[in-house]
Image (cartoon, rainbow, N blue to C red; front, top):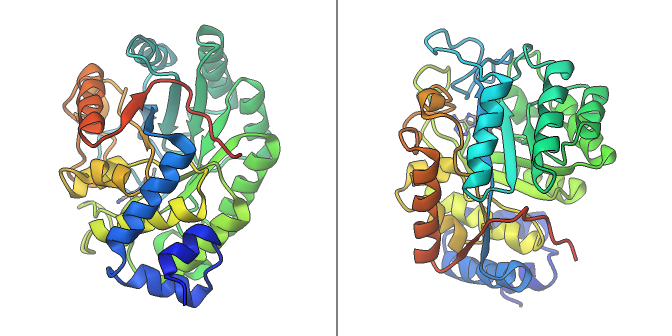
Length: 344
Ligand code: 5AD
Ligand code: FES
């Protein structure tokens, strides 16, 4: 019988049972990491792509049970950046070599289509050579179309969990797994490069749920897949659940790299939060993107999706050079271009 890691790498056709077995054991971890790193190097070499993350509002109308910026968290001090402040972040980012900006925020009604399209157009005019990525949650198809026509290229919307039953345990009744899927398919149809993803070790998650996540991703075939460990936030209903595990997260990164050789896979801030070398370990397990923060230091602590988030005190330039050192020490090379997906 072929070794499961080799089988995944060469044929990508493991059955649900075989995937379940691979996810549930640490037996193959070093082989998984090695195979994932080889596949990533075949496709992308030693390049690690940079995305400048601008967390522009922590107002959110949603009440996801795990998230620190949920509407129900009255303890949080809220902020919004003005369009000029957002453009200042892009300006600083451009100076530091960033060619992709990720505008991420809660679902804030103050950023309706008029305001958001004006911001995207202004960035598009000022930086025609940059990719504009949006991460604004669930909106109507029409809204996604207008933003695309204003110049946005990419959209990140994690599906969070592909199991409808599990989704219902992590979200209020007002939200649905089906609407989230609708959003992802709309975004893909419109022409965005799309990023989906999920938390590892979220409350009530089982190995079967993770297999469902992989199957959903095969169906959607996204350009980017964002995963990171769940980390409890003290002011949320899920505060007493343990954080997701480092090794399980790394294993899932490697499995994703083997199943989706082309995909853009970030080593996330959450991974760097649960372990001092989490992001470096993520890169070695197959990740090829990092998303340092470009938000003003004055607001960083307020964008607290989970507790103990790293990089909240560092200036953008410090984060940029810190990451460059870390990436090179891990044996990779930081590349400051748009970093488009390489499907073929
Ligand atoms: N721990 C880890 N990740 C979280 N996110 C939200 N809350 C948490 C948490 N407590 C993730 C979600 C969301 C992304 C922006 O951050 O997956 O899609
Ligand atoms: Fe932000 Fe190191 S990456 S300080």
